[in-house]
Length: 507
Image (tube, rainbow, N blue to C red; front, side, top):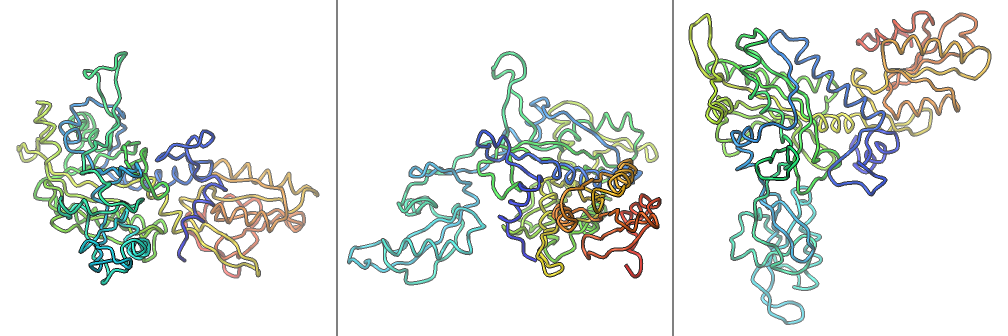
């Protein structure tokens, strides 16, 4: 089903997945807090990534670098001089926009409007982002028609940056009906600046890291010298990054503080194309293995004009979010650019010596770079379902059990006849191995619905039959099927289900 973004945002707030940061003070744009369920979901996604890409492999080691590094790192990487977006300001609305994400809808108007007043041969109305490109022409045309008359032809869509400088004076900004209110594009560096030490002086300037990759490159020699690794091998890291996005939007998708899951995989230059193809395929399949199996997930190779100057190939793993198709993860063949840059700026040798071949060279790098927050949002979108059970509508999050925030909920049917005590004993046993939940309040159907909405894959109920044959009822979240399991075997039964064993026949 197509999830509506406002419904998902409402559910995330209501059930404790995601809250606006510092909401009691009115919040702060571009920052989000993960609530009790959200932190478990995001943690499970990161742990699945770490388990599959680091702990289950023989050619991968981990790293955890500091958020603030020597500022020369960012000079070498090009972030100080080139990590910027072209921005335009609207003098009328005082709003700021990324110039490379603005689209102009060029309308052809008659020589005079309906009042007989002369008009320009053409006039441009501005769309604020790619997302509104499909509907903005109609909305803008309706407003502009009152002032300039009805356009004679449908609009032509042109990126703002392709409009001649002289013609930009005719452009009408997204939040105004006046022409010529936009400033010329200016570059804004996206890094957060801070100061290290007691004095706020230019000599003490440092930056919050805008990506985790550079910490890996800066530590390449340390890892080679201490971890006994041989090419090909990878270094993986999960950590926070910070970018001073001018226009954070689309819930948690584009934030100023976010978490990355990155790998830098080092290999011989002649082997890099093969490893690029491997990681391109492997990373796509990882998402499908955890439940992103719909047609909304896609793999797109970059055209030649999209590639960074140092990259020979890049592919984006994309997901069709409610607000449009956007990148989840990028897999790039970066060549030897990064290590070469850090050797140049640091003066240190970061080449690799192959003992077997007695050969020294600079390794090439394949980089799978994923966003933990974007992945969390994609899994939320994919899991969100509205269906009907027993004639009643319900909202359910159909998470893969591996990433579900709560693995099982344990209920006593009623608060008497020893059921709460039995249920709590089972809950305590399960809690030794998994994150589980205990609930004895409200009707059993209402308790089931609460867990469906939280994405809990299984519920276990102690009922009247438990007192006679010492079995409990297991319930599956997606199908609502129920079956009996010996109470003493509840923990093993849950483990089997979480590991992928099928629901028993006849359930």
